[in-house]
Amino acid sequence: MAEIRVLSDINARVWKIEVAVGDQVGEGDVLLILESMKTELPIEAPHAGRVAAILVAEEDTVEEEQPLVLLES
Image 1 (cartoon, rainbow, N blue to C red):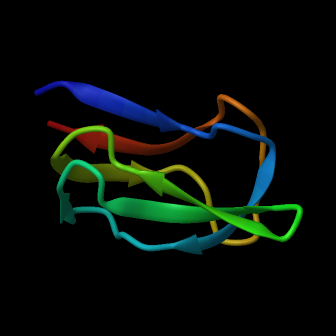
Image 2 (cartoon, rainbow, N blue to C red):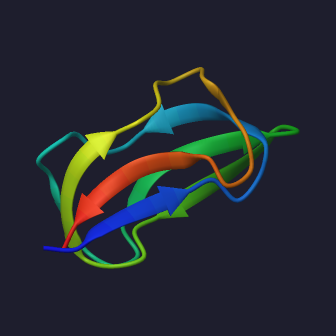
């Protein structure tokens, strides 16, 4: 199994987490939503797989390139 790290594209705040550990997701499914300057930015799964870990919590501040979610494919 390959492990895929899903990274933040920008400095932002975690507004809402849409998945839980163990969930199966498809390519393009929304994993979580970031908020930056009152704009909501969905973070999508780059590949289909299973959510192995969620590395952030709602309301966390994240930096660009910070790992958010680990997927196993």
